Amino acid sequence: MAKPIYILNGPNLNLLGTREPEIYGSQTLDDIAKLSETHAQSLGLSTAFHQSNAEGQLIDWIHQARNDGAGIILNAGAYTHTSIAIADALSAAELPVIELHLSNVFAREPFRHHSYIAPVANGVICGFGATGYRLALSAMSDILNPQSSS
Image (cartoon, rainbow, N blue to C red; front, side):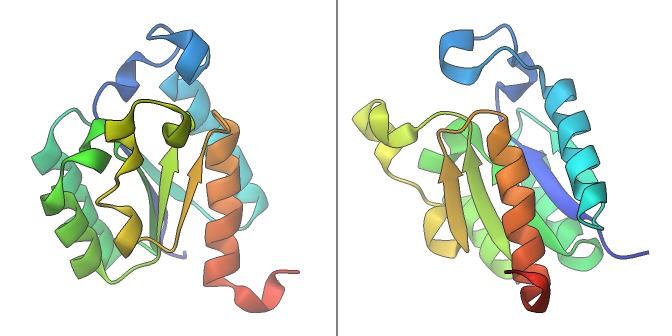
């Protein structure tokens, strides 16, 4: 079987559905995991879906993906704006990376406008809520299989 796409979710994303639904939507992270797996299967992909509030755990999963994964979709939450360590791990992984955010970070507080992840990512998807996970998986499929993209 082909290597999975690692979908990694950072701090506070375990609170989706109850934390500021006007910003992050009403779907839970479990809902998004199911949506992601269903869409991945339709693309001929599989996923390894994880969430942690701990920076080190996210880095460990990035290291694991280096050997066991085909690509990484990362919603790093607030670590996007603070973690050089995660950016370094992504760079060392030598895999395609898509940075993902539920909200449009550029329409929010100025500190959210800077990303340490974006310079090491193939692209950034933000502002589409849970639909962003489907968009990210479709983009990852196109990156991994450029001959099948239209």
